[in-house]
Length: 237
Image (cartoon, rainbow, N blue to C red; front, side, top):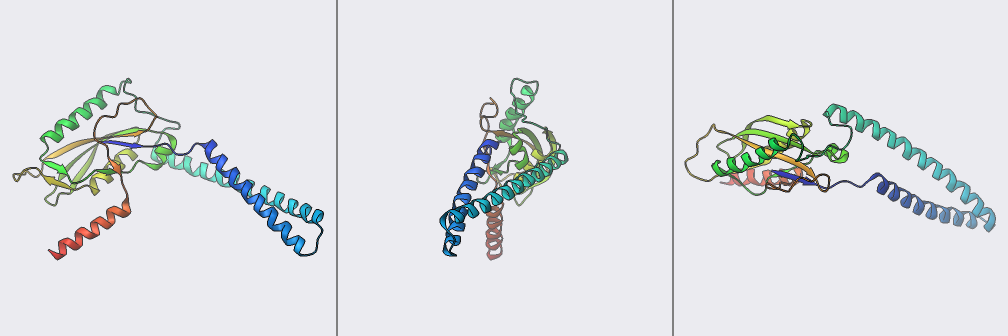
């Protein structure tokens, strides 16, 4: 399965948005304070001077608070990166690297497994791209092995391989836990295990070709609602 996502806004874009919003706040605050001071009987020049000083203090407080918050978020993100064992910088799936053969073999095995697999996925398989990995520009691969129970749910899910971090296997496992399977034939042999590779890519981050089926974005709220409806239907029947 090919899971694709897009890059988040760059640092420069975020700064531009912040300063644009700050400029709007400064203009509105200056007009509001000067208007209040004029209503209190101060002259126009004095009102503009006092309003400018107040706005300057406001800008200093806001910028320092933003810097403090950015440092705290950076420290927290670094702690999460270490805990999740993600690389420091961008890490892309490169097909011409030594991993090329193994990844392509996994995709080929996926097509072969699905042709022999007596189960079809009900609807699109949905997966969630790991948030911190997407923010850091890290791509990855995970291979999950699982069985399908009588209720059409994946069970006994195990990690065969994950690169460069286990967070990609966690996302693949979550997608399989929310997936539903239906039999292709009435003669189903339970207990058989199947392997499914998941390739996590960021649009424009690497030159990997778009091969394999794409997984849609996992929306936990919609999945929970769907499961509740299924439970009600099951009780009704």
